[in-house]
Length: 213
Image (cartoon, one colour):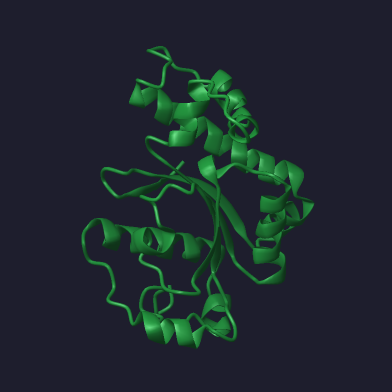
């Protein structure tokens, strides 16, 4: 593990980013989340980081995460400006534009990790379970139906049951990671070569903790 962590690096340089393995990036993100959850987040000079990254950036990771306002990645992972790309879309759903963004972040910009990050009590999952039909949301929510059907759960299978909602979220995260590998030759090849890692994780809104799944 390098002496300088992602949190301590006011500006993430190419040299520091490239010195990290994909597994080290995962560990540093989880360590940053542990600091956040325990109230020990790093004090940052945001203006210095903004100015220091204005001309170039060398993010170590790219997140595909939900747009939920309670899960801002920079905060919950104790990261600074320029440390990670973040694709945010309701329910961390995958489409061609998202895949292209993940490919840009890794193949073109050098990020070492793709993390698909969901969260507990996800509103998109809740709405999909309730089979909500409303404008363009109808198409978005349809992306979660297979996860609902594939989730094995013996209890009450409704949006009123938080345990079922979270079980569906776990199924959806695993399916999303599978879809990324299936639909992106670029990412599959980078992963097979060891240049990147791809993982799924979930953020618990109550504890503030991220767990790999």
